[in-house]
Image (cartoon, rainbow, N blue to C red; front, top):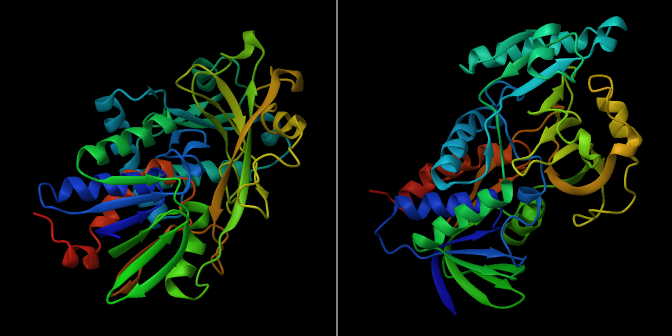
Length: 382
């Protein structure tokens, strides 16, 4: 049986970013770090099944971890992508209020723009108010009463991002064990004995970054159901009509009323030149249910046609879906990231509810975890 100083469960973007940050901080100290992953490749779940947008954090609740870590992390991710040659669209994004909504008196959307503007000012994120004609100048096919532009937003190839973090982690000395599903966590003589369906390892510190399965890993380690994740599926349609694949050159989001749990169905180009619409939100029972009861394309067209009238149902083809690890916090419509030291000896760090903007925040999440006093005390960096 092999022994490690640190074991990370989950090779998604958060797990790979933490592995990279930890190994780089402790180089050249002989830290033994292992990442366990149930799939055969990194980023097979939430991390690789999203829109790839690096959000600035202005959509998030003020002073939340989501806001702060997305604000820090999106800049780090964009800089890292440029340094590593990861495909990146540096286009900015638009958040728009459709003319139809203004005519119908839905002023809540305008209130949302004001809130986003205030959040941007508070976090020193540059935004620009856009009149109808200014929106049209940026995106000729978009019809909007007004909107705001967020120039710093980029779109990254999320799979390439995760793979690069994994490669850098390995280069710094981390080990990865794919095809290893964790089935038991036992405490033995001041350390954790982690059993997978293939092997058993011993570790002094366990970091749970298992995404949609993080509540189950926490339960194995704590012997109690402290957390509950509600799997929320988001589906994406691709625009397949050749002459419409270039309808927009940057992500275009709707302004949503305060209290909305997501960012809304939006239109988003990718670095590979393809154009997608999504995601919606659908609560599912199975954390691996990506395809049953697919939502008809009409819902997606209805959501975007009011500001992108050129799109019709026949332009769309169902593409893929992702499942977000939503947690519900009592008294709040929108939950925050949970990054918690749930046991000091042996050390257990749980990352729960790392949903959107988890991709944007990943590198800041890694710094936050490595800065935790409990980890600093156990593994002081130079």
